View (tube, rainbow over the protein chains, first blue to last red):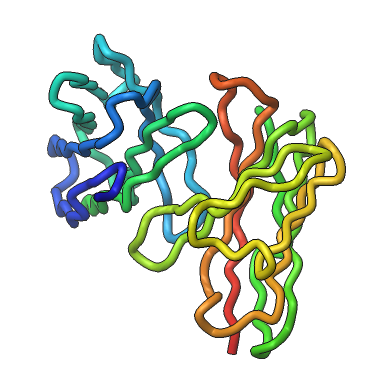
Length: 108
Length: 116
C-alpha cells in the first residue's frame, strides 16, 4: 500500500468555484503534512503546511484529521492560475512521502 | 528564500551514456540532499538521501551502482546515472535541507532525462 494516496482527479471547475479534495496516509507516525503544487512536470513548490487545528492561507484551507488519517485541501474562489497538480506530502523523520497528485483544472 | 539550482534541466542521450546531474544550494549549507525520481502521472519517489561527507542511503529497489551519488561539499551533490537506458528516462529532482527534522526541503528545478 502506498504511504500517501490521492484521488488523481481531474477536477474541472469553473472560475470562482470552490473545489476540495482529500488524501489519506498510512503511517500513523507521520509527524507533519504539507500540500505542494506542481505545474507541468516542474519542481514541486510548497503551498502550505497542514496543522491539526486546520489552517487557512488566503483562498486555501487545509485540514488534518489524525484519527482518520486524512488531509484535505479546499480552494475557494478558484482562479485560472490555480490549475495545477496538488501533491499531498507526509513527513516522517527525514523523509517526505509524496502522493501522486490531484489535478485541478480551472476553466474560464 | 533559499535557492537550489539543478543542472542540466533537460538531457537527451543515447542508450549506454552516463549522465551527471548537479544539485547546488546557492545561499545555504545543505547538510542533507535528497534525490527523487518522478515518472509520468506518478508521485515523486525518493531514491536516496545523501549527507555531506558520507555515503548515500539508498531506498529499497534503487541500485546504488546504477545511480552514483556524491555529496562532497555542503553546497553540491551530484547524481550520475551510469550506462543509462530508455527505462531510466524520467524527471529527476533534488532537494536540499540545512538539517534537522523540521527544516524545510528546498527543491531544484528538476532534470528531464530522455534516453534514446
